[in-house]
Length: 182
Image (cartoon, rainbow, N blue to C red; front, side, top):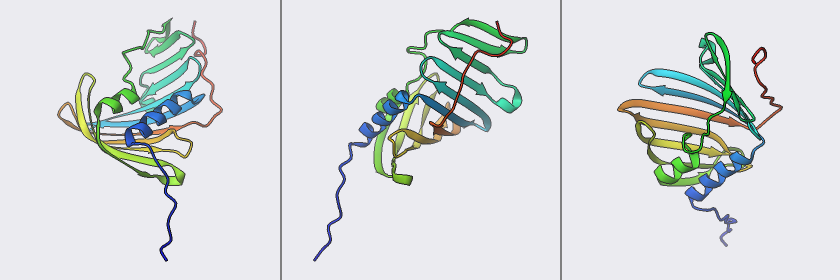
């Protein structure tokens, strides 16, 4: 007699990806650590988000890089002369949507089980956002259905490029206007 394994129905890989990014948007807290290497030039980004309306980004923190804080429609940018406050610009259409990037550029996607009860989606991807990029990616989705790791290996603007983006949804996390800013 042949033992039958239980079959679990999963949506198409694109549906899984889009559901993961929708779940990410609903998370009250998100921490992202992003490492990008483009043609031998490396950048590190620390990105934290607290819903609603709070965002903190630091580029290359060990080198005193760009720092941006957004709290309820106001932004503070740290420069060599200190913090500068202004209304936060509308980001609709400016910030590249991860869901849109995958929807428009992911091809040949395969989905399978991932670590710790999650899912993994791998495939080819191409996009243009000021620079043309194409290559292979891996998206790991945690057991709660949110992105946990995104890796890309390919070419952007004719240069070898790779990035690794790790996601966390653990707190506590507080984002407040910088101390000493006006």
